[in-house]
Amino acid sequence: MANFITDMKALISELAENVEAVKTNVERVKIEMVSAEKTAQSIQRKVTEFQTSAQPRIDKINKLIENIKEKTSSTEKTD
Image (cartoon, rainbow, N blue to C red; front, side):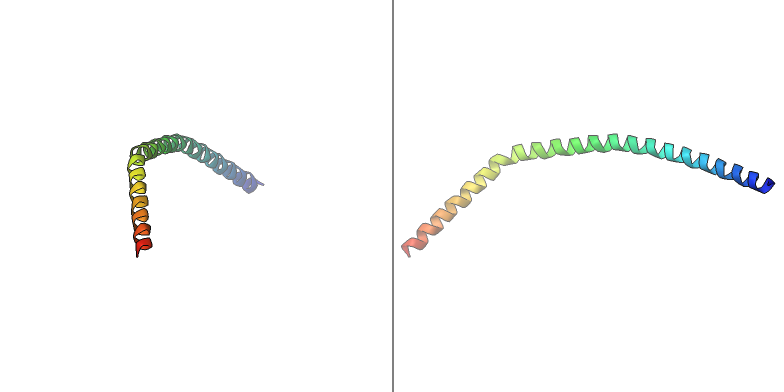
């Protein structure tokens, strides 16, 4: 019976330590989530800025491609 009580005390003590470890890890996860959200927002902002700044160049490239296609197709028609 004494061994049972000693074993139970040890198990309860270990359980309490594990519960504290879980609480600590949950707090760490919460902190990391806030940091990850800020990072994700920053990345999204940078992507939007890039898209906005690159769009005029993309439009120009597309127009050049269209002009090349038109010239190529008109050259093929005359051949």
